[in-house]
Image (cartoon, rainbow, N blue to C red; front, side, top):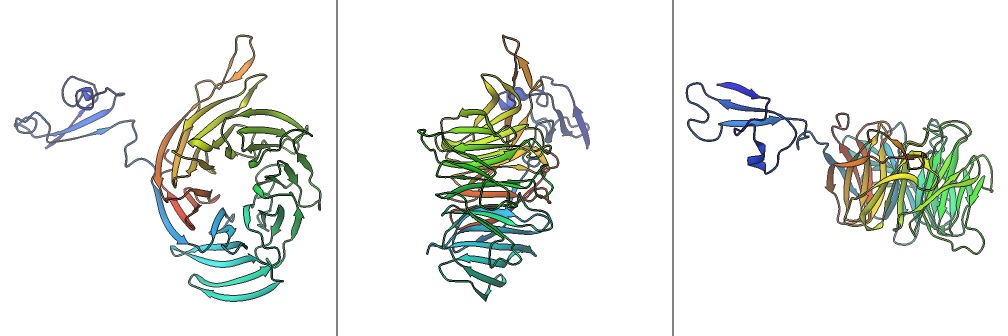
Length: 437
């Protein structure tokens, strides 16, 4: 038996893929198995065996999304975040009785162990221990019974790893998870629920002071410095007489030196506003016609490169943030990604061209952004304008029948991520072959 290779597209079975598949694709390396003296397949019109080695990614070469651990919880999870430099993560949400909760989990031997649980109830400070199936957990019950909506580690140091959270009453708290009886920082940040939170300047990501940005139903976006008590360092709110729109998502970006920093905010009416914190001005705004569910720059600590915005009705938009046209703004490409709301977008920390989107039907989609040959061109008047690239779907999987409400990549281990969904499940996922994409 011999292996025969054909590198040219001929009119025989091996070369003419158009006769078999109905379309001709780019050149590939094809091979067949034949037996000396007997012809191809003993006189049959097809080879005994064959295959293809080409540039097109096969099913075996694609990244695979694997649910490594699944755990059911007894409360609704609104957000989950990896604790940096560890195998631990936190989940945040509320019990059916209306109390807020933060739980700290650690991955141990292929299972999840509950390490700590912070419950916010009407009771006074009261520390107790209880035994759970995941191991020994310590429960602290503290005042203010409000569900936890969102959280971030983005403004803390790698040594402290403090968690900043926003709740349904508009409170911003910062917790030391090693001693969570009381928050180390607390402020009444907004009049209504804090929908979204982000941090920068901590964890070695982003130059400048550690800051936290919060967005609320009251229509305001505020930037906080944990070193300054009570008052925000910046407050972006509608002018008097203008309708207040519900802010659903915020994101820091452009923090590549001590002076530059921007905040991008998305609203329920489809508005996206880019605030320049250096000049304290509105740098750019647009409308994508559907409520903006999630915003994220591909990197916070570089000069603005790309911004992904997800929305209701299953679409997301990728904006090229390198070139801003005076009237047309930033170039963008949009994609119909899911059959329902795209709740979240998260870029892979180790490769900014890859990102995950989470859908309202319980699906995760992994995408890759491809840059155009030229990222800018001149318009008819000779003014520079951006050129959008393209996105391609690498893999997708349905994990739940309910919306995936949050997800987060591990900053330390490529391909490791967590997600939570409204079926009260938290899942640890492994996504393979990301180093080969």
